[in-house]
Length: 124
Image (cartoon, rainbow, N blue to C red; front, side):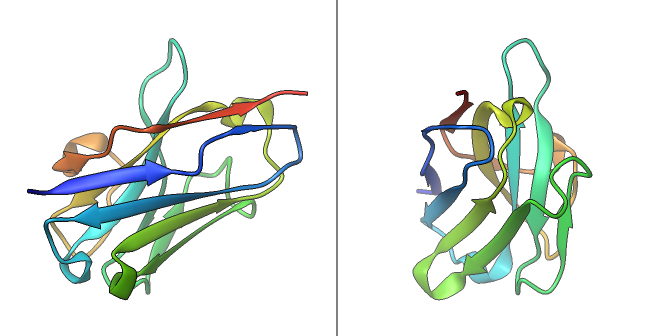
C-alpha cells in the first residue's frame, strides 16, 4: 500500500525555521520524484518544491527560493523540506506527493499519491 506521511508542522514565529519530513512506504523512493505542495485557506494548492529521483535536480517556487531546501534520503525512504526565515504567507497545510517519473513537475495533476498534510502556522 502506497503511503506518504508528513510530519514536522508546527506554530512558529516569523523568521523561524522548521523541517518537514515526508516518510514513504509501499514503494521504493529510488524511482520517483517527490514534490511539496501547500494550500492556505481559500487558496488553490500550489507547488513549493520538488526533487528528482536521485536528488540531482531540484525546483523551488520563486517566493521560497533561498529560504527553503529540499533533500532526500532514499535509504531512509524520506524526503525533507528545510524551511528557514518563515513568513506569514508561508502558513498553510503542506503536502508531499509522489510523481511517477524521474523529474519534477510543478502542477498537482502530475502527482499520483499524496500524504494527509501537516499544518504550519506562522504567527507572533
